[in-house]
Amino acid sequence: MTRPLKIIVVEDYDDYRAAICNALTQDGHDVIGVANAEDVDDEPVGYVSDLYIVDLNLPGEDGMGLARRIRKSQPDVGIVIVSARNALSDRIEGYQSGANIYLTKPFSLEELRAVVSGFSSRLANSGTALPRTLTLSSVRMVVAGTAGETRLTQTEIVLLAAFSRASQQILERWQVASHLGGGEHISRENLEVKLGRLRKKLVNCGAEAPAIQSLRGVGYKLCSPIRVVTD
Image 1 (cartoon, rainbow, N blue to C red):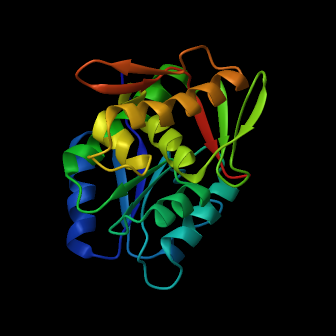
Image 2: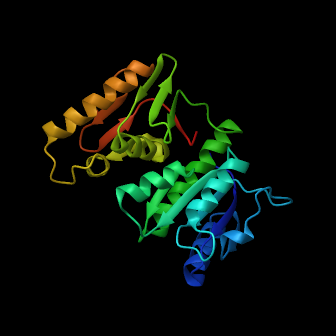
């Protein structure tokens, strides 16, 4: 089940912005496109967005600054950052700035539509933001649950944030390997060691074991819902 979203696309490249707006409009969403961050109000009046899609390389205020401003004034809104910057440090900064998901360019419109559909389904099923079992603080670098909190590495933060917004919280093996810094050539044994450490941290916080489930022929599923925060 999904419902239409109010979406603001902040992208300075006209053709790219138009393509995104047209695709999402065809899916039934109410979409507004703007070319710079200065056109986005901290406290929206009249048009209150459910989701922002923000490019990083904007004229004037950049996308990171805009994401931080949006997250501060609208703590429950969805934020998708899109950027050609694919370094680990950029992705971490994106999540620390308030992004729910970070898509690297070039990406297909189908992938973006799937991301938006995921947000729509969550809102339709809950009426508000989904309840979360675990909370991931990208600033404090900890994950917290009913049993306490545990410190994480930077790569673990990026992986959990990716799991949190993936469809059904499932990532393919190559995606998990990439987020953990091993690349596609990492051995299965090495990958399982890294995941084993993360599983233990999540269970220690209160997640139900195994916390991250191996799916034969697919990849891995995060079993506990998780919310990314920036405080």
